[in-house]
Image (cartoon, rainbow, N blue to C red):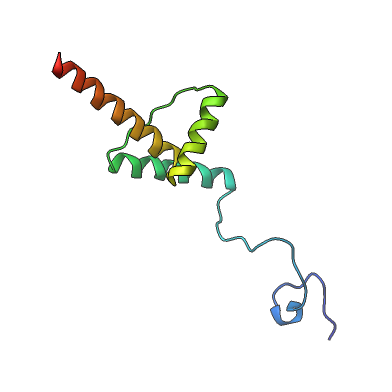
Length: 98
């Protein structure tokens, strides 16, 4: 019996054949997977008491934030949060002293 190239049910006949890419592990298309992952991430953030804040900054400032975060071995979001907390605490300290 000859091996037919279209027969994919007999795996041992194709053990040495290299197939491109990795096996499909999720039946959903990639676009749908991304939407579900984003929804789950937002849900986790809400459960952890986090709120989303979006702002636009100059490219130079962003690069400096990235460098500082890298030096301190923290994420850029953690760095921005620390800077905001520090500024708010110092602003409240000034208000109380006055």
